[in-house]
Image (tube, rainbow, N blue to C red; front, side, top):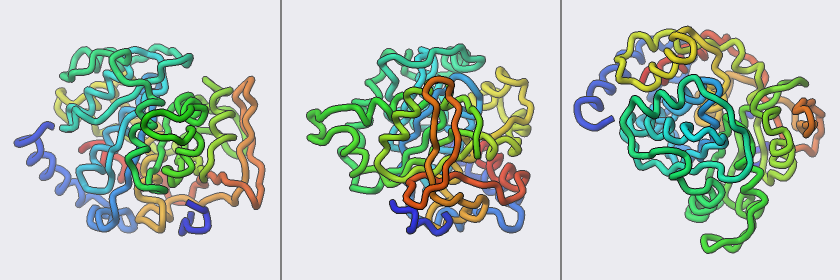
Length: 342
């Protein structure tokens, strides 16, 4: 989608009824100017592929919980979850969250080639302690194969990609060749099916950020070869948005609560991934969150593939933009917290 067209830019049964009541009560807490549920729902649902590492920071867990909350509100269609990390528990952790929110069959793909392997404070525990059918990342389809399968069945120019982890899967998709699902190569398939990529990554105007630096070569290649527009939600965007402090009020059978307990003992935490997802769902096309951030002029992010540092270059012909803080981060945090508490 060209930048010119951006305006600015459970389980079933008892749990479902209880969650509906809780969300209705929480809506009262929205402050003036925040996106009301009615306003947000009065828009077509956004088909999203969500690509996460689900092992390093706990904001991946929160963003996935938000994704389900938004899907329950009719704002999102969850096409697939892709795991960009080699930690064997990451995909199973994602499956436990999907299962808790009543979507155990959401497709999950996992990186199968070379990639980042890091320990996690929460992924293994959540995978072991909560119900779900997926045993490990080894039992999932290859992420590239699943990308190609999902994209082949979607209307042209419709899918929004949200990445909140390493860019390895994206690099591998763009490098893929034709298959039985599509005669297009990976870059051609992405150009045809994706509308935009919203990327949690980078630090602006320059710096180093984990989602890029841990596999800097993949990030540099993926971003350079990407065929549609990219909006970056940089490190500085989520830095001042603290959420999750109210998770202690939830039942102990909630895997989001458990992940935060394991990560930082249920303390408020920065919200990098949640901010990117909120923009992808409610910020595009003049949506209810379109004035939460400004969009930079068009340009290019330039990545050093050796040390993972990045810098920004303005370019009127560029296909990249990045978010610039505008709204009080406490107001954004309140909106995110309501979705996290779903």
